[in-house]
Length: 402
Ligand SMILES: [Fe+2]
Ligand SMILES: [Fe+2]
Ligand SMILES: [Fe+2]
Ligand SMILES: [Fe+2]
Image 1 (cartoon, helix red, strand yellow):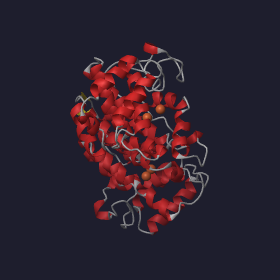
Image 2 (cartoon, protein in one colour):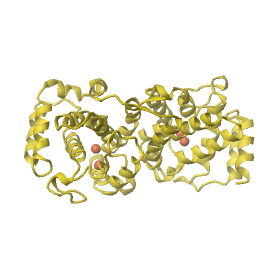
Image 3 (cartoon, helix red, strand yellow):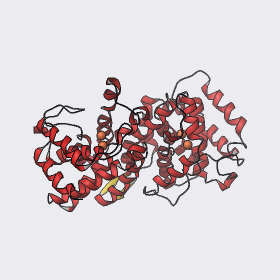
Image 4 (cartoon, protein in one colour):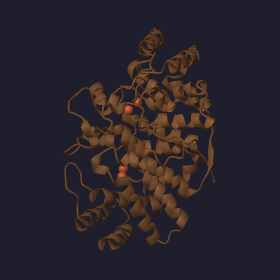
């Protein structure tokens, strides 16, 4: 089947952008803004349309390796971003995470080198044109957007940005790239396109369209890129999406689902918590019970999952399975408060397995639970009318003897 790679990338970029915007505290759409400017710079520097597409993907994904492991509690949001960005590990982890993405040109080490500087002052000491051009471009745009909040209006912003870039020409950035930035930013439209209300339209206009010929297996492979990013956000969920994916496939086979349905269910499981990228680590990793406000915030994550997947028409048939995993048969779930008649069997299965997977994982406030203890909790949920009794029995049979 034909698969529209742009829509897929832009759909999921919404959630990816939330990671950096959380760490930075203010700006939103950073990755997409980096994508828009980087594509224009890439064209000006004579890169092919395949490479222009790839630089958009790298821009969206450049900081996918950010995690809060190295943070000192209590520092300001700006310091916090600096601290995590100041660790070369986020480049190495990020590079590994994106390895399976179907880039259109033969490029590597762009995420790895996105903090290199022209004069060799970066993490890995690469100098000048030894740094891949795409990495040079992303570095310049990333740095400039973080410093100058290019999506926000401001008097004399262009002048300030030019002064900033000119001062770093030949030091942090290549002189040719600084020159190219002057060229692409000469119009008022360039600056307006960067603002949130106009950004999506500008991206659509600027990004070359790539449809790849693939099958569900191929879409699963791309989706695993994102499930790795989701799972690596918190050390407590490092195998949550992949674990759910395995259990879902196991149960679907147990119920005699055909191979294609099993793969589509795997994709739904891989992406079910993509909305968690928009949740603060302060909540995900809190070593205690969540308070009411934190619980309410947490409940937003499946709404974000739906919003992301809704932008990808090819995934329409799996969107409900992925986004309904916190809905309950008695209407007590979230975010839509659906009821039994609106929840198909695979959505119901995803709910039961998500609970099973989560309870058998360690959390900041408790150890992982045994199969027996997990089944006890699931049976209580059956009594409360929340989850499907037949599915809970089947899960007990399937995993009880493992
Ligand atoms: Fe970075
Ligand atoms: Fe960035
Ligand atoms: Fe969830
Ligand atoms: Fe989950």
